[in-house]
Length: 258
Ligand code: KIV
Image 1 (tube, helix red, strand yellow):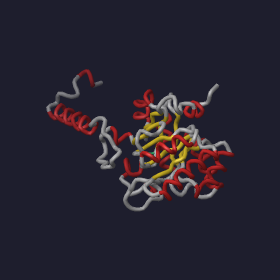
Image 2 (tube, helix red, strand yellow):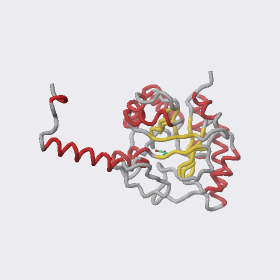
Image 3 (cartoon, protein in one colour):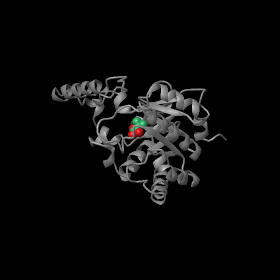
Image 4 (spheres, helix red, strand yellow):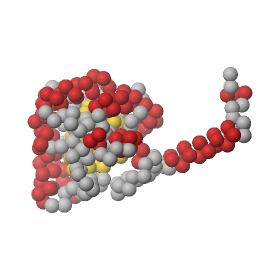
């Protein structure tokens, strides 16, 4: 039987890979039929907890949200982001990844970085932890304003090198965050594993966005964010209708009472 991970890898050059983040069961359940990968991203730090950076996200938070998300997935591959400071040496990384895999029953973990952490990634994969890579902008270690990646030749060469290293190490796919479009194409053509873009053009094998952003629940000003619906408006309208019915005693009627 073809494993879920091999199924994702086999989509390269055949079908575009659809990925979204989710942080809870109900959302995961609602999107699962339409996604190939659901990522429990550490973006939950800014999206749900209003943290200034993903650095404040803890392993415990990731585990709790992932356990909830797991309940809502029956189709997609489930990937969990390893938070900052949980994989800074091989043995710590393995211990924490094992904890995440065991307690959340996810299919893989995502780790930010290339050359600097390649020994750790090799060690994890050797120990049967499936890893999704992440290059370009690395929110856990980028200070200040996020700028697109691939403007200088040095930067381009480093990113291509990192992607090749991740592929050689055995990563099953790589997120490209805010990578300039020509570089995204060059990467896509130079590795055999799928690239998943966020702000990296359609020159990628798949796309990912943060669920709250596409629902219009956040006020994200990032160039790559497209609001596909205005769920905030829908929620506000439901709350308003509820308020009107409660105040006028139209709700609850007998039908909704014991
Ligand atoms: O944390 C996250 O949600 C992410 C993606 C959006 C790629 O890393």
